Image (tube, rainbow, N blue to C red):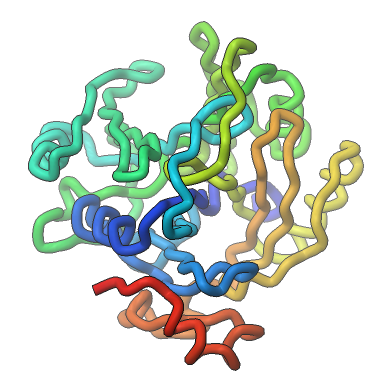
Length: 309
């Protein structure tokens, strides 16, 4: 199992306003700010990591809140929907809670699973899906107790004009199998892990191309155990004729990036070293952590970052 793709590692999205983004995810949805750092390539922009208590892979939603970037457009070539696992029987709690914050949620089903769908303040499309088999530990708040708290990712949905080339990546390289199909929606699963192990594809050749900005997903990261497995997958991606980056040190994991044939930016990321490498578990997310190459610019960076309080 250890040399396989272990489901989703994290998903990274774009927001338009740092404070609004931080408040919505921590105060309304009740997930933990696991890490407060900056974009490696644009250190004047925050990089927020939200997850469970430890920031376990498969629970981590991250954001680049580029101030004033404007609204993007979901469409073909993007991961268009993020599915979170919620406890069985908690849909009414979430409908009521979202209503309290003037967020409209619609009930529905995907492959027989009950869910609600809604948008975050930037228009990012979220789906809360009831699961009776998810035993992951949750992060709780004063308002959101264990019986309702978000478990982590259930699935991610890719919207594509043509599914077959992407399906080959998922099955031939990543080891996923087709689990179900209904109309234009396909569901792929890996049995290497029990949670955060589903990728849905919506195929529609009439979809307009998406445009990355606020309210859209920047990339989807898949999980591997360590650097050795990471580099094995680099060879597999290269052997399939796709371009892929060298190994990149992201401080909390090591990464490779490549664009799959349908246009979605994929990342492969390691479990090691994890989020406690530079601050203890109890203090995660409480102070600004900078990439090593930017530490010497701390005073300047802190002056230009948006105020969060």
